[in-house]
Length: 180
Image (tube, rainbow, N blue to C red):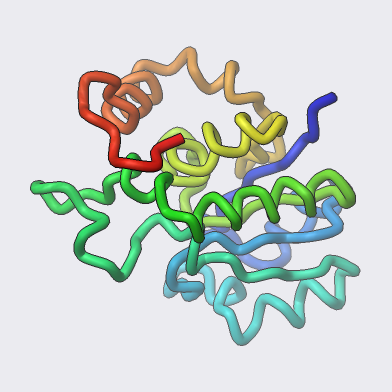
């Protein structure tokens, strides 16, 4: 049995346009996976504002951007070009434990993971978290800015997504010790 887990990006929405994206999909828990939970484009999404707004909408908030964020503080988690190295990040014990915890939460409540990008094919919530969550038996459903919900397969028809995914998980690159 698989567990559905939604993903969503706050993009440059207002709270009034963002909240229905959650409530229309019966989201009970929003898990923030941004490394730094602030936004100058969507002020409602700042860590000091968002939890209270969600509470008013009957949605719980959980911050997991430390172990699941896409822009780690540790310089060793970046490749030689300065891009986050998803292979190294996935091998971390903290990451693996947080993924298991997130999958468990999603099995009990309708859960969405949050980042800033509207397009999941350009975001770590698909490229880093997605494969790890799928290994835990989760199916990702992506809430788009227009309210449409897409599966990862539906996103895969785009050339840009395929290129992003291939570069994120280049199978010719040696995996670090402990890689799952």
